[in-house]
Image 1 (tube, rainbow, N blue to C red):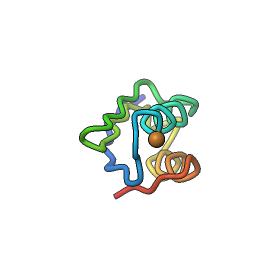
Image 2: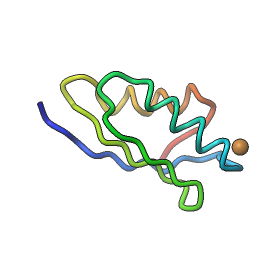
Image 3: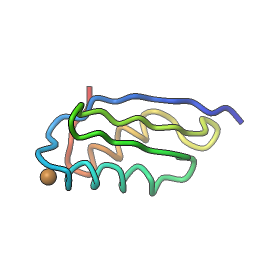
Image 4: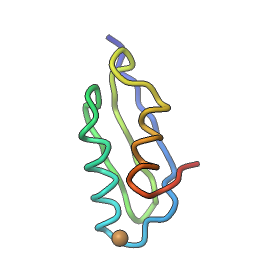
Length: 70
Ligand SMILES: [Cu+2]
């Protein structure tokens, strides 16, 4: 098991509710241990187990929630 930390810049968040949506979408993924989405800095910090989930799936979840990432 290898715990990784990924920081994504999330584009398109216009309020704290958007940040909560992103946070919930990421928390729903198996293998994600911790998520902190900060609306002010527009960043999502994700701690995950890379044997259960990979970076592309994390990005996809953010995009499925209606936001884009850099
Ligand atoms: Cu919003």
